[in-house]
Image (cartoon, rainbow, N blue to C red):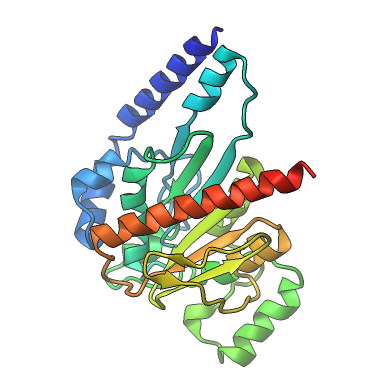
Length: 291
């Protein structure tokens, strides 16, 4: 197929997906009532799709893919070399009681086309919908597991239970689970990393008001009003699994409040700062690859 035909077909496929995903209107009605600064219209415009994975209670783990591909398509036409595509996975709502983290991801989906070409984005705004939608939202999922302690880091079987027992004194909000990857939500993330192969993972939390980082390369020093303050690594955490064990940089955003989102201007500035750092980091990575 001619390259313009493929490009048009891809655009048509995106339109078809957007039409199909108007279906979870009930979820958008519920989420807009629960989440701060999220209108039903913004939720529906996110055009989420259900890839097949579900939570413990069977709720779809919705996602949205955004592909900015114009430069690659046009470069083929004019005969110039194409750049390697870069992939960024953005996760919100790993902890169900961190409502602002899910809202921020929805706002960023709305801005995702405002980025450089040759970028693929995958957004998962609510990784823990069961905890999120309880009358009183919980950090843990429906099995009482802290998903951010359930990832298969090295020596998980020895370190995760010991850390929970000794360091948290068996805090039920930080229970790592019976085994690593015991939960469908954490398995979904690990399978996505293995199959989709992101170059960067951005995970949104609250309420510590800092910026954390795990993995290779140079971390961002700030996103909006959040400044880099590395908090260490924990057995079973996504930063430990992705950034340290798998070597995929993990930027962890800790918003200042779990129940209030930053202002629109602040969320926009965080997005701009993220794009700037992604561009700088990826340019640096490309230079390293050519040495």
